[in-house]
Each structure stands twice: as structure tokens, then as C-alpha cells.
Length: 593
Image 1 (cartoon, helix red, strand yellow):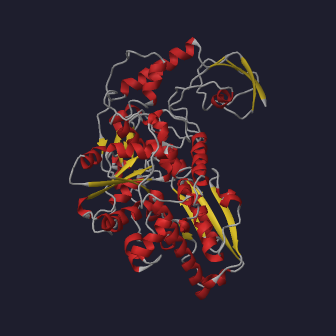
Image 2 (image 1 turned 180 degrees about the vertical axis):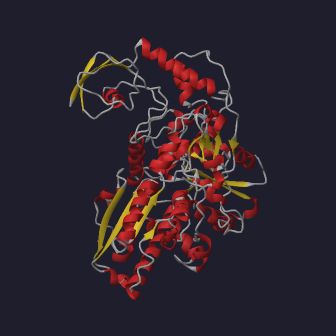
């Protein structure tokens, strides 16, 4: 520990802490534009400068460690004037009309300018030419708005281990983007949207489908249904000033009905269905390995995260035959909406529009994949992120916080608690083990409250084992067998786990991978800014939602049971195979760093 003084307040802090971290410990905020929690600080934006007595310069607090006896001023006149100049210089090069920019309300640069009292920019000069890249299905880039903070570079390279964004050229000519200024669609981008989630301005945003959804809602000849992913209910409230982790399931349903959707359903229904299909697939692979001794299709990897699928197709094609053939819950829902649901209500699927509300920008890419047309039509027509839904509700003049709760519609709105936890890292694995254990042994998993605690939390890679004792029927071969599982979130952690599995191919039988840190609750389409504190609040809310459900195991869902009885037949059956399963193929890695 070392003793320092910040703004006249004596503090004792760890001697390896930075000034920024020390100030945060004392509840003193220092503004930043380039800093990202948990990553090596760059000191690129210079917004977090402070005054240290005895120092001739104003150091960046994010990259300057404390030392014994340091006396620091975070808001002196010298600091305020220098910080104001830095922001004015950033504004002078920032080509954007705040009146029209979609980041206007939550633009960090604009908020900082307001805080510093900048009402007129003293510096006028050359601005970069606009070079908007709309080539990606999921993301839109506008280099004219970029302030070169390099957050997107850091998250793409250090968190996701993709690295398709980097500084190009030098000095004033510096731009951030793919190599050779190529469009985003030409490189090995996985469409995760973490770049858009951390961008402080409007330089990278999701490819909006709001106008298309509004057109569909206003068309009297269209039957428009909507599905909502489990992560939305724990984050949407943030768009309206509610605290992270506030559950708004009922209000969200009411808002969607007021917007004019003909039916409001829950992706949770399809998540329960996914467990039935994916769990059966896992047991089938385990049986095949037992009978033949061939473990080449193990461990089975989950397939519900489209960013992970993109990553595997680009970077780890040797895992493709191990990935579950199950479509994601979003795509299962779309296929069933335009077949099973359409038949039940007598709607021509050609006149049906399926809209998804997702925490993930990669879901936009997934919905547009050519193989996602097993219903005979594009299974999911449009995808809105959580942020887009927040904008749509505001646009419609709905007072969200004043809404009463309402239930989702049947049958595709009925779900169990196991489906809710799909939102969290470790949740898909826990949901699967609840059902696999019950199906093979005839009793619930022996963990308290059905939770598998070691799979929860924000540790990058988590492992667990479950012993299947007292197995029944065809699953007798599993008697006393230990099923070892692993969970990774964030693609950098996924790469590390895959490397370990290559060296230890027999260690695990089932692996869950989520693209984004924290799982879907930290998705690239969630309300900004997602810190670990925010992730933990959302995760806790999702567990509360699960624990509040009467049914908490996917195989107990009566609507899923009815679906199999009336329409699908059985898990992994012929109709399930056609509608709910798919294949993956290796993609060429193009010009990624």
C-alpha cells in the first residue's frame, strides 16, 4: 500500500494501482474516452489527464501508477483548461451533426463537451471525408465520426482475438478499420458488435432495421409477430433510466403490444426446445462413442451464439463437426412461427413477418444466412437490438416506466426458468445439464436450487463435472460416468479453451461458448456502457427470473411437449432435423490482422 492525496483527501491504495483506479476507489470520477476496464490502458485520448504536484506535465491518469506521497488534483484550473482543449480538438476533427446522429443522447463525446461547458469550438480546420461502410449485414461504420480512441481495436484484438480493426496510415490521415481500407464484409469479422458497444461516438453502430419493422407493422396485409431474447428483460429498462438488472419482462410485453405486433412471443420457448434437441444430440453422441469407441465427435460444442459460429467457421474449422447441429433459439423460433404457428392460427406464412429482439448484432447476420430458410421463407425477417427496441418505444411516445405488466402470448410465449438463463454465461450448460440429468436418471440434478454454482460468474473459463448415477433405460451405459463440461465467454477465452481441448481431446464431453463477455447479457446490442458491475447486475436479474418460474427444466415445458405431440414427433426426428438443424462450413480468412 502507498499513501497519496487526491483533491485534498488522503488515501491508502495498492501501490500497483493507477491514478484513475485510485480515484475510482475514492468515488472521484475522472472522465475517459479510450479507457476500457480490464485492458492495458493506452493513454490515447488524453481526456483523463490530471495534475500531479512536482510534475511539469499533465499525465494520463489511466496509465500512470501511483507512488508514495503523490499529491493529485483531478479538477484544478490547469486540468480543466487542458481537458477542455483536448475535447475541443477532438470536436474540430469530428464530422457529425449531433441533431441527426443516432448516438446523440448517449454520445460520450457530446456529454463530455457539455460537462466541460463547451458551447463554441475555438478550433476550425480540415475534417476527414466521410467514408461510410454499409457492406456488413450487422454493422455500419462512419470514419468521419471516429475520434481514434482505439477502443474498438482493443476489444476486437484483446477480448475477441479477431483483430480485423487497426489504425491505418499516420498522423492526421490515420483511420481505424480493416487493412487496406477494405469494407468490413471482406474480412473475417464475426459481427459480434463489441466494437459498437464500446465506441464512444457514432463511428460504429448496428445496421438498423427499425424502418423495415415500422413498415411491416403499418401494412394491414402482414401478420407481424415478435420474439424477445432472455437477455432483453434484464437490460431494456436501462434505455429508460432504470438501474441495470431491473426486470421489465411484463412492461416489455405491454410495449410490444402497444407498438402493434399481432403476437408477442418469447425466444425462451425456443430455448427450451433447443435443450430438448441439443441434449438429445449430446446423449446420442455419448452413446455412439460408448458403442464404437470413436470420440471424434466429442466434445459437443453449443451452437446458439452466432458470433461463435462465425468465429469457428473462420478460425477453427476443425471444430465444425463437433458443434451441435441445432440452430440457435432465434432461428428455431422463426422456422416454427412460419410452419407450426402459421398452421395453428390459419395464417399464410407468405404474409407473416417474424421480428426478433436480440442483445446481439450477429443475430442480424445469422437471420440473413442463406441456409436459414427451412420454413420455405426467410425464417426471421428482421432483427432489432435492445438499443433499437428502446429507440422504437421512445419514437412511439410510449411512457415505458408507467406501463402495466402483461403476459406473453401462447403457445410460443410459454417457457421455463432454464430458458431464461440462456442469457448468462454458463446458463446454456446449466439448462442442458438439468434436463440431461433428469432424462437419464429420472430425478432432478442434485445441485441446490438446480444451480451449478461453478458455472456462474465472470471467470473467463469455467469447468464442472456431473456424475450420472442411477441411470435408467437406454442410458444405463452412463451409470456412474462423469460428464465433464467447460464454459467460455468472450472469443479470446474460447480460443484458449479450444487450444486446451486440442491438447486434451478426451477431457470434456460438452462445451458452451458465448461470443460476448458475460454471455448474451453483455451482447453487442445491449444498452451502453457494459462494465462488469453492469454484467453482474443483469446476470443476477436473470437468475431471479429463473427462480421465480414454476417450471425450471426445459423438458417440463407443456407447450414444447405439445409441439412434439402435434407437429415434430420426437427430438432429432425427421421434421426436427429439417426445421431445427443446420450445418456449418469453413470460411476463408481474408485480410485479418
